Image (cartoon, rainbow, N blue to C red; front, side, top):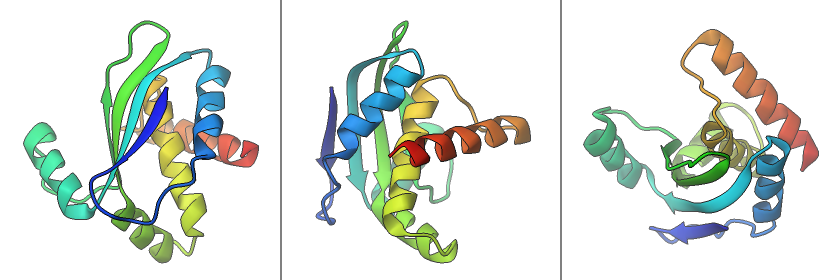
Amino acid sequence: MIQFFYETQPESVNSDYIQWLESIIISEGKKPGEINYIFCDDEYLLKINQDYLQHDYYTDIITFDYVKGKTINGEIFVSLQRISDNASTLSRDYEEELRRVLAHGILHLSGYKDKTEEEEKLMRSKEDFYLNQY
């Protein structure tokens, strides 16, 4: 089951996204388990990045993978502030950028990486594919 939680009081996220995210999991040959999206601001996510990953920079998403076999479980922290800034910088629609990041977290839990140029290219193509499915 996918659930949305809020650490700050942002605009709420469209609950219709849950069904779409579950369809991504199924399309990837996996099963939805316990997946929690925690929406927060930049400072909250920076603290997680520093404390758990020893990274001292802002990011839009951090995914903690608790996958067991084909069942997708995890916690996905998302900075809505960073998504808004990125959408503006990249001249993208906020909702589209939000959906891209939400799908990105599911794709990480499905086994996709984005550390190398080749991995990032595959991740972007998967994101684009699923954005077009929305």
